[in-house]
Length: 305
Image: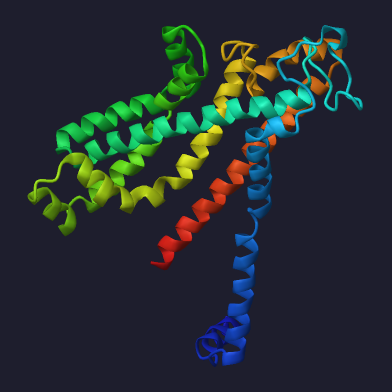
């Protein structure tokens, strides 16, 4: 007991760190922060290669991704067909880059729809009276309690025909609730600011106040969720296509390529699953790492403030 007491007293009256020791400690923490800040560099480079490759795939595709070479269906990877062919004789290497544009388009378009909906809904709820705000938040919580994939399937069944625009709209219109709650919280914190009140007194409308005064204050808080929504949209499209209720086979995407997985497993054509799966997983992991780094950056900047 006395030993512990002496240790506590000694720690309390220990001499402060010298300037050199503090410098070494700060340098060590700086190196640690720099190492973590460089961590998503590989993910960013890999994602940039995938996106640029999908956008400019016409420059290096060896085959026409839509051409059905029935003489070489389910062909193993070789010098002519680098990633093999599918059950309709289409070159998988060309299909992966060509179909990536559709998957990325769905991801970004659905995210744009969900983000715009969330900002408007969250701002309306944040600026509304108490009873209306409570009603809107209860509606949001009901949406969050229902599985998102179930809502997507239900709305897609209502719309009927499946295409890139319809599936992007369905995924986007069902994925805004979590972002809206964050926007609502941020708006309620800054709605009493002097510049917001002054703008309203000068006759500014809702959208003027939203885009010029409210959005710049909460956009950094939702950037992580926006980036992760891109990942969720691509994953949702792939899941729907894998289940057979997504894009048809004539529209090439990473998800529609995975619809042949059951036939590939039965026939032993592993390349039909491995290569699309690797591209899809690599893209999702890169987006996740970038989103996590963005979240750490936002959290660090807020803590410094």
